[in-house]
Amino acid sequence: MDPDSSYTPPTTSYSSSSAPTQTSSSRVTTDPSQASSAAVRGNPMKQAVRTQKAPPPLPFFSQAIICQGMVYCSGSIGLSPITKQMVEGGVGDRTAQALNNLSAILEEAGSSLRCVVKCNVFLNDMTNFAAMNRVYDTFFEDPKPCRTCVAVSELPMKTDVEIECTAHLSAEEHEEDLEEDYEAPKPPATSRIPFIGDF
Image 1 (tube, one colour):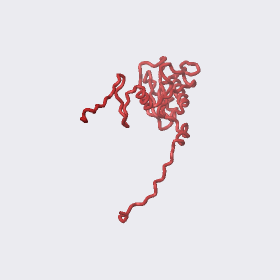
Image 2 (tube, rainbow, N blue to C red):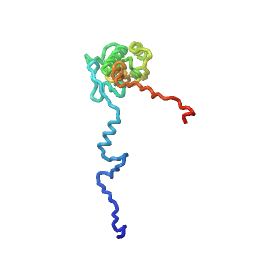
Image 3 (cartoon, rainbow, N blue to C red):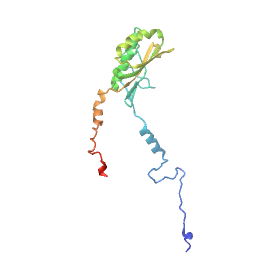
Image 4 (cartoon, one colour):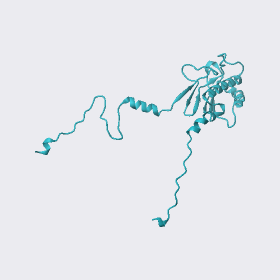
């Protein structure tokens, strides 16, 4: 029998919805649901912070977001969480209220003003710079956070100061978690330096 006459070439079937799947260890899939879930697993988790000790946020944003050990706070103005009105007095009074609001949000997140690493201050008039600084300085210990201060044409509710900040989570708050994750290093295996006579 002619050996070529019994030869049947291999066939590969294709579907309209996907390409052929390889069976090697580096298998490729075209399933969009699997690709999507893999992308989600690779993204950092975000957790919203909400406390009644600070003015409630509008539906468009959160009071703060916790992500990868950091707390990102939205801008805070001199609004009282009790009266829902702007506090009376000067820019110093509203600076104090804004920072008190941020302090309450940070504490709810497991952080504090001591953990703040960056602040952004917005003034409606740079003539308020000194008055704002006198109050601002009393809220932060050394080393003071990094800061940017700019003047803008207008702020929410016609206020004269708005402050936002970024902080890290408190080490004390997560000390137990860190201890649970810690694994003592294993001592190296006992060995001696080889000598020429060993070979």
